[in-house]
Image 1 (cartoon, one colour):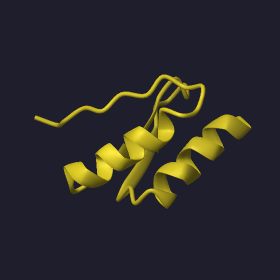
Image 2 (spheres, one colour):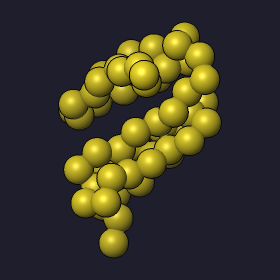
Image 3 (cartoon, helix red, strand yellow):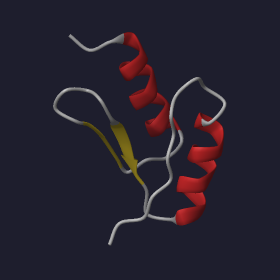
Image 4 (cartoon, helix red, strand yellow):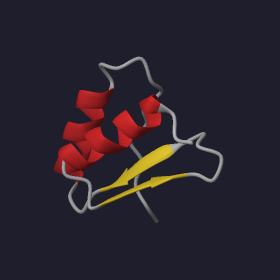
Length: 60
């Protein structure tokens, strides 16, 4: 069963242009994959307004 907050996070990431949206096995983290830094930064800035811990990271 997926918590409503997790479903909301995943939907918001998709709406903000994520090419992929994943949840860790236990649901402790939800992540969006973006092709361009500008898109990722826009989603990051948007999601900071929610009462969630939000991080912007870059793959290696």
